[in-house]
Image (tube, rainbow, N blue to C red; front, side):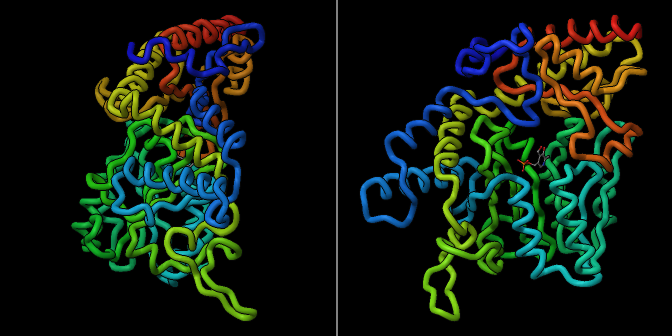
Length: 423
Ligand code: PLP
């Protein structure tokens, strides 16, 4: 298995949970942090701490250079044309809300249509639901196929002259399904929403990608998937909590009204009016999470060293091993992509399942007793759970620091569930 030995880069694995080795299988919720990220944040506070963009003094200049340096790093990471297209937020949720309450308020009117999918996390559903309610617009949903994949072929039929936005997750946090965004962009283009491409002007139908899960495992390449909006979170990709990224194509960002008002987002203020700052600072009112952004920079460095091709392969391999192990437990139900045994090609490092007759929370507690951390519940995707015919699942999710010993430990702990409940 790749990445052997990297657990030692993550201080949290030095501790035990309930007297057992920590087996962390909840990275889809939030990832653990390597020493380099923790050190980068600590070093910022110890050596450089000052506010950004404000001071003439040395510390402020250093802090500004560090903060803006990470913006450039993020630009290069996703292949954006300019750093001005990268807005730092608190996380994916805020990134999507920013788009809904600025671009959405300005561009969605009565009778317009927004398309989401059956896989969405509440973060990429509720903001659009609320916008549609406010505007008397219509929310359409790309349906799920029986095999856990999205029915992308249905997308073309959902697009019409009033469609303004297609907002999709690239990887389901609940069942791992990967959505082919390149194909989605092509379908939207074919439907008349042309010129989605970088530098290609602004199209009628915009595409927003919720990359909260996918970007951590596969990176993102705007030249390959030229979407209009991309949202993702630092904390799911080894970085600190409280930092998110919103990419918006410049032609669109220029037309968007401010999200929040205050310091930093203004250029000039009189008693009765204000002029907005340049991009992207117009969308970063107030003091940002400077140390967190610096930590994200260190996380990107760490991930780049591993390489995103290798990361996705590693996570999928572990998920594949987990699926194989789980399939040996009698009656266990797995949710997620299936395609003649090629599930690994359609899913990221996530496996969602239920043990017959045992509530997922009970499974989670017994696993926790064994030091195995998993997520149980609806995974902030209640409409999806309803479609799958369950209220909740047990979810194991893998990331770079996991290895086969974690799969084995989870399987041993699951055997305890079977023994205790006499399944
Ligand atoms: N979208 C997806 C697919 C997610 O998995 C998550 C987090 O679990 C979010 C959005 C929300 O991200 P955050 O809580 O970092 O804002």
